[in-house]
Length: 507
Image (cartoon, rainbow, N blue to C red):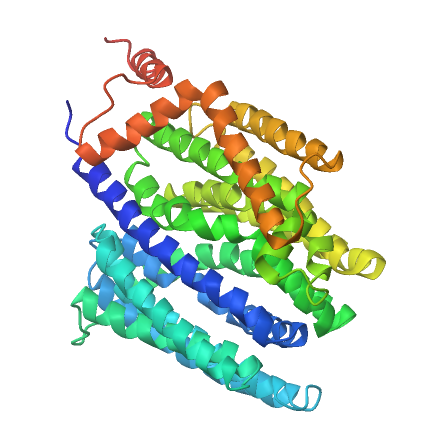
């Protein structure tokens, strides 16, 4: 068998990050369940609006200089240069933020402007801390990254709960951001072992800015797409309506949070390292895309068919958060496609097709900005959610167009069997519930309904899609063992034939 040390390290990194991600996810998830009992929709709405405005102002950080450290490894003084540029970028951002806060103080009296500026300052510490984490990512050394993130999450949860219980309201949400950013910065600095001791290369800086310029467009469009709904809804419908929308969107994105480290962060250096090996790149994409589809189907079911049960279990069965259940079905397809579209974008970025990645986000921005205002005026929060769903569908189509000549198999058929299994499981339970055969009531009954739906989906998948699951699990096991698959997929063999016949005629 052929050794695959890099693949083994990447899979081990994915395991560490996934483990830390799941623990952090559970901590944050539990925190949010407690916060909805301690805070009010308006608190979440104010924080969401301040965060969205701060993120829009932070468009300049879309230059992604730390990613240049990974992409341009070996350039003279690459880390030192990226560090200096990141410090300058942070300073410019704070000056711009102070000016915006001064101008906005006349229009946003009270606590909103201090909330906005402080949030801008603490969130963008990540501009500097990413330089340290980029060093670890380049070495595929994900264990310290996972440990730092988990520690920062735990500390932020404790501080947030203390503040919320003391009646700090929206400031407890700000406390979470501050603790998370500061501890992550200090932890990454210690874990990387790197210290700036002087040095700067002008040619490397020029190349970094050139890389950042291309990345900036994509990231700026991404921020516009991701935050425009929150800003427009908050301005047009108010922070109370935005609070319900924000909590519904949080539930819609839970699936993405659960898989994003493997689908995005680990995938980026892996795709970058395979950009000159089309066969292995295609197989890696096929494996990741197929797994994502199968993992996300149960959550698609819960959001689309059982939103009331989900809100009852997570937020309580009272009327306080009942408005969330009305919005959730619109976020079902959005949440299902979110990590899939992000994985396509990361693939395009990792192999250097930045123009195609920009086109993907540009299409989403056009759809979103063109439809949001009339949709919000017509249907409020549900209209905004419907627009975001349409933008994800558009992004998926554009993403497939961007990679059709890059990989040997788009693997679109990976949707068919899992979705059939999801339809069978969800439809069966919905019909039985509708006939009052399973007349469970209360939060316990709602939890049992969601559990049965998930179990039925898994059973159907094992019956219908057993061979594909065996191939995917086998590939992961072989990767951890550090060996190639025992049997190469057929499309890899086809690629070999294609390479032979597209050359100079020799075999």
